[in-house]
Length: 624
Image (cartoon, rainbow, N blue to C red; front, side):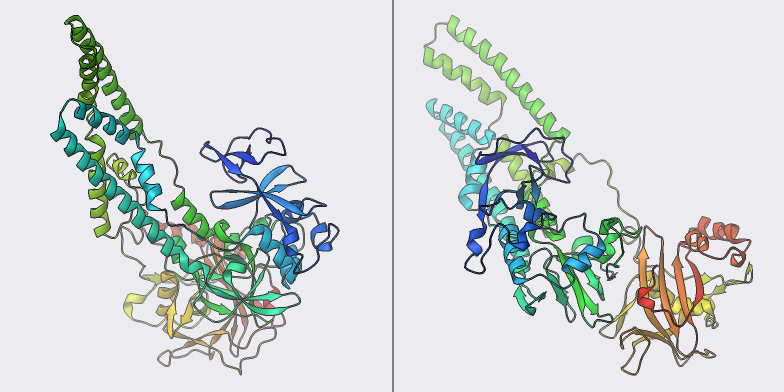
């Protein structure tokens, strides 16, 4: 018996003996299911290239994929559980998930092993063992839905009731129940079939995306996304690219719309995974969130910006149902089993009815036997009591109610993939929402800034007055310390960043071919003062490098170059966190009390800080 790795299961007992052709699997909900064990034969690849047990590609047992290959017969044992493929790890003696890169890999290992792509042979082996990079949702056949619905205990009880009534010549009510049940079953099957077709169409487009893959010997190739394997090197070109898998960015930067996964339409900046020495797993190597380097399946790459190498590269992390989108689809296909109080109460209620019916049946038996009725009449009357106590029309009435509720929800654009849960909604006493953008309007308005000079705060600069913000480090920080992007001529990004930038009355542009800074691409983001803004000694500010905002770090940082001026680093974030990085003598003595004045009034307060940098630093090599 095996438990899915990474799920909240209790320790499973020892494995079933080796030769078995089936396995008993226990999932995170403690339910058991039998799974057929399938053999994958690597001999299928012999027509492409000869493979021997000592072949260097499969001799390195550092990776799960090679540990799964049984030698010398070169075959792999696997099972499929809820669309995920598991292979038998011969070294550890257990099934392990396949279709994703190992979590223990360090960033240095990812850059070294996968940074220059896989060979054609490696791709073929991984393709055979990991399976295709597809999210396939089969349309459930009508006959399956029909059988599942008809075998419902309620309908079996109805069948028993109807047969009993016909034997008693009680035809009118029996026909009415039959017609109600047929309509109820037909509507339920139709609704479930419709949901199945919709889900199939929703994920179908994922499987037919053309991508550019860099091979170690083959170079750049155009491939269908279904042929991708974990470890492949993707080359991201152009804008508006749909991600067909989860991938970790190793070169260049991307702006991604993750609305499909998070519901937030704000573009997110993704930075390359830094190459760090040591054997620490790449996900835990820094205190920043590792998701900053991951391009998730189903999201859209709005903009891909190359670094010094001239291309944007990403290593395929997970494929198929292992991806973020695949996980979302699986949660729809295999929802949590319902263990709600409502259903426990419903069962108790039915048991009470059955108990009442049993007492009635015993009483009827006694009365009719004592009065000398024929045995067949006694049996009929006794069973009749059960059909009176437990109403056979109950399931049809419940189904009709659920379907009616579902139709009303559908009119408002709300789709329900598990209709039985509608009943549970009637028990809700309290619904909690997050505040911003749900109960309030989106975005914020900039009230003002409090500049500091020496070790004290100056008077508040209010933007309501219409006065322009005077030139200085504060104005430069507000103009350049953000994650805004220029897309189709419009500035897009976080509403807070947008408000701060708009307050400076500066404009954004992309530098031309004449822009040359050591170790940087020609096309960099440049912010310039508008013609209406006077007394600015610099022509503009070039944003050389960005460390995007991280909620764990509570800050973001940019490295900028003033055109005809200094090279600076600007930081923006939670005031307490920003102050902790500053030289103590530069923090105003009234910092804590001033901060408290604004926070107690309900303002969202942001801190800004800066430092001068040496001009000869290679900016992309600088650590956060």
